[in-house]
Image 1 (cartoon, helix red, strand yellow):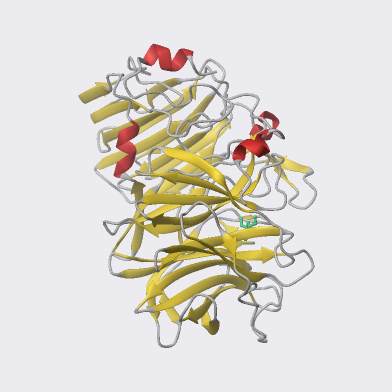
Image 2: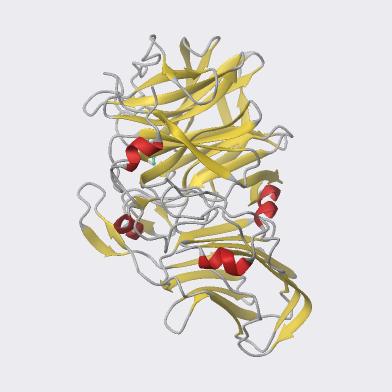
Length: 518
Ligand code: FRU
């Protein structure tokens, strides 16, 4: 029987809501990492996640569980899986979900330290209670000279032409190249090894974690999270990005014919994204809005880790675009009149009345030809700010979190020792554009910036003081010309078991909303 979150309540509490998100998914307390089992089942979205409920540090992995009717408002359900079998006693690691004959199947990795990883299945009739199969473990690592015998994890399962396929993260036996392994099944319980679907072809990661697969706009997309990669000269032990290839999977040979590596997010924090398809055929992705091997300051408040907003994927001319799902518009507070400005220019640093907040959304179109260089500071105060800078001359966009608040350090992945301050500045090149479109989501400890309809995305965690809520626009070369500048305050999307009144009626007055939150 699944433990309820209330039984586990006894162990741990969120002690301060300063960084606890209002509308992003996060554990009620304790630690979370990867998204798991993201799916649409019997009329609802189910989202599971790697969860250690007893401590705000990584530990034996459970599967936390959330459910939503609309991708905007969510509620916590009892823990779906806990590590309690000989094949998963070290943790129920990452996996995915699929519906078959009205039942929901979770396919996940059973982890036991010192043993090869293997795959297992749990089944549910109601999307609430899950039973592990007696046939577990249902899939062991193939004995093959080209396949590492231990690292074999994170299955993503899908159906194609009446058969089931699973892609599983792996590396070569010599530890040098990450790869994705493809398996085929008639019934989800008996699997045949089909192929090495794709492999690192040079600096694409030495282990591929969390592969995901989707069919988007007529193309196949293979997503994965690479370990050990050199990105723009930064070589890190456990890197830090979610990657993807656009291409075509040949279901006969099992070979994925693919283009260049693309990064799904160019910011600091985004890992292990999972995709699912909506009933109307869109592909939606949610990632872990964090990274391995950096401090998680919110752990001192009794929780650690949160998810990105859901993003809709598209492929145009071989390039992946990701944009916030339209369902999030439901979170725009109806009790607060949004600021909707048109055709405004400024020639000095400006704060627009009402354009501020710790949980808000900015939608901007800026005349890039006229506004040659400018910055936008968010979560700002006298002492803190997180700054985005656009420089038209070099077509660069920079995200600087060096004055965001509580700064973070890189830590040793194995023992948690502090190594050095984490990077704080990301600079990316944009395609030259006449209009710069920015869609920005701010929450209590995060910032997600979607540029030019999701051609680029930069995401980061932030740890500002609660009262740093200003937004300051500064021309750095004469003027900024806005075609439009809209600001919306956002509702609570996720109720919290310890923090009273974190779910308010949509019609509650704003003052009341703010006074009832810590
Ligand atoms: C990726 C990962 C997965 C693994 C899980 C364990 O973040 O390392 O490969 O299944 O986390 O929590």
